[in-house]
Image 1 (cartoon, helix red, strand yellow):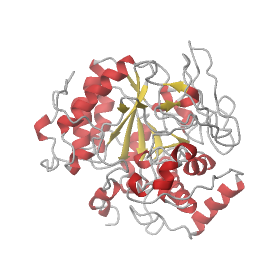
Image 2 (cartoon, one colour):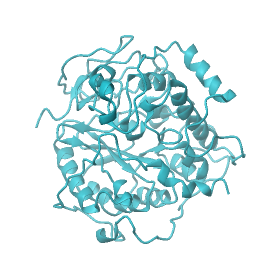
Image 3 (cartoon, rainbow, N blue to C red):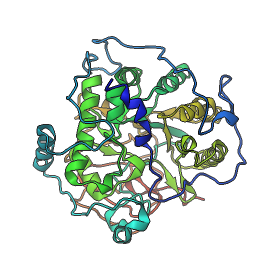
Image 4 (cartoon, rainbow, N blue to C red):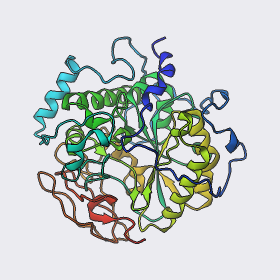
Length: 442
């Protein structure tokens, strides 16, 4: 009953409107659908009160002890939920448990320098006057779009698409997995810890199918509103859940709503987690805003118009891009498998996991299989560095002990290079890894 109750709690994971207010999806409804899945749900049926469809089932499941697709990874665990072994679903875990206290001690022992930045207030940018004023200094993404050179926000090569889906696994995720498998596409799933222990078989299918698994927190909060210890608890429990269910521990994470600043980054880095957001340009974020469809605040026509704009930009970028989608809801999965992915394939995008679009092997996604000789972790974190094949090497990696504001975004023909020896700064909206600029070409 504990696990079945997770379904009723789904709205908690995406119930809030982002701090920036209204969705950025295009207000108009003019769009082009470049290709359609023959079995797609009609566009007119992708509405907030859509009829409930039969729950999809996984085409392939895996037995305990199965051999993962990554060389050197441990066999698939025989995992069953033990009541009381994890925190309450969809709530920020308490910080006084012995397990969380251990993680707090480990972060302290890592030697990581955690900036003394106060937690932000709830209810968005308008309720955070001081934090907004310091957004550039503190690298706050939510109210200013600021990124650091250690954030992964793009792919290395033109027309490469870092496929990412957030907030699952859910009852609808099998439909997405089955479609990806049918098209021989691999992607990156940002997993909520509460969903992982609710749908472990689906998480195992993602991992065993060769998709990249990353952390997306335990309860999907605005991370900058939390205390340091709460941040550690959110990340730690999710890492542990994924480890127990799959046998491997992710080295990557995405902040819910993109809500991250230098304090949150530093804690994540100390916990061996690389921050991945999604591509932003002077023309807008590469965010489908698909999750607003079930909420009824955005129409599918608006989302398709936004996607059309994203496709156009993606075809003209000098790098690849990362697009934000979600597999929490029936409508978002129907949109992805019916229209978004078929159109992307028709346009010739190279859809792949984010780590692959950075020229890294899938093995480097996890602590247990990362190649420390060719991909040595930095202080408290993971190095994700594209190979630079055919493009030379990119300068501008962050190597100092703290944030460094460059004051401008440098252009480079090379793919971005990421170093975790310290937290660097581009300090500009739309800036991306290692000083590589996006969309100053428009």
